[in-house]
Image 1 (cartoon, rainbow over the protein chains, first blue to last red):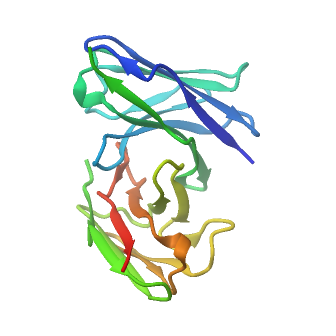
Image 2 (cartoon, each protein chain N blue to C red; image 1 turned 30 degrees about the vertical axis):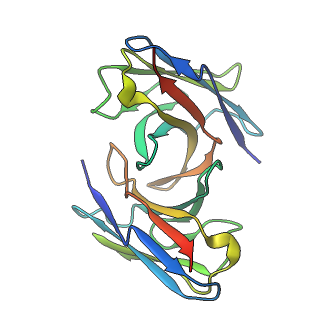
Length: 120
Length: 107
């Protein structure tokens, strides 16, 4: 059974960079899309973007200028960097695997989420 | 971006009730629609993909239907563990988008 676990600082100062790691266990990181999704308190889910194991990425245009993602296949990990954060980036951040079946893809495995607060 | 609108935003029901949640897309998403169950402090759980396909190990009391712009999630007979927040999500085009959620509460 695949498991995902987010890790990283729970507190980031405004204007700095939020950096998170997702560690995948129980399955190879190869041949899937790996996603980051966030949820501000009291709000809905927002897709941040995804990375394929080849390194190809797709980002939400609303965050594209500040986001970068990368993958380390040797460690079965993928990463999120979000630059120039503000209080609006305070949220629970989830990593998730997108399983592809034919032309369909869906988030079949998720991490528990990690709360990141942006505050000085 | 494709906007996803769920209704109702909250719903009170009793164990054994049949409930239906609707999701409407701002443009056609064909059958590229998934449903998730989310409980506080837990990882969201995939219930339905491709609008009507039941994810492995999800109880058969959950079902999904629809295509194009209008979709429904139905729970045929509520169990105590079903009280949670439910989200629809389109994967027709990026950026992928979610509905705002429907909180299902015990009456």
